[in-house]
Length: 202
Image 1 (cartoon, rainbow, N blue to C red):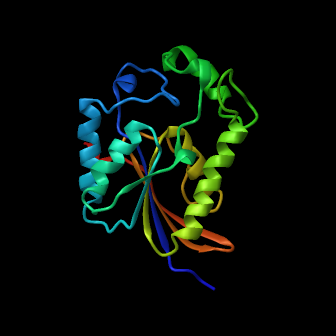
Image 2 (cartoon, rainbow, N blue to C red; image 1 turned 180 degrees about the vertical axis):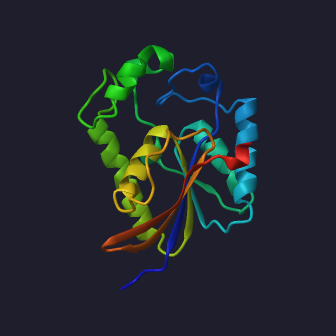
Image 3 (tube, rainbow, N blue to C red; image 1 turned 120 degrees about the vertical axis):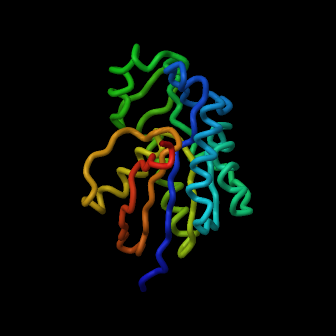
């Protein structure tokens, strides 16, 4: 039986001082910077005229604060979800991205592990588990997910294998927004409406 379409907005959290300094955050917590707060509000205004039924966010403060900026326009509470937390990058957290670019690229492989961190396989498994459960329990609704660069990459790859009309895209931008329409679950049918839209930030 065909289901009612489920609209899924996936947003990356706005920026922090760690981002301003080019540092890797991973599971570390950080508040939004002044620039981040401005970006979060621009994202919120973009979505203010869209009906949003459910708001999920990573438990990390930068994602929760970004989600709250959006949720206030829809009178929704933010549901903190541990499966949406960023991948734990262990000993790499706090280091400059430019200095560890090769290590970060290597860690995109699912079987790679990092000292005191989370394996790619474990990370992918938990994000996909959340996504599949989210789709099952929110049929016909419009759902907002606010999370981080790593989980967004997993979600986009999950959907892009089904909708090949979209080519390769850049890494998720701070306060960037993607939109997916899920038309059926068995078999899964999805349409990618937007990937990493940042027009609202200019």
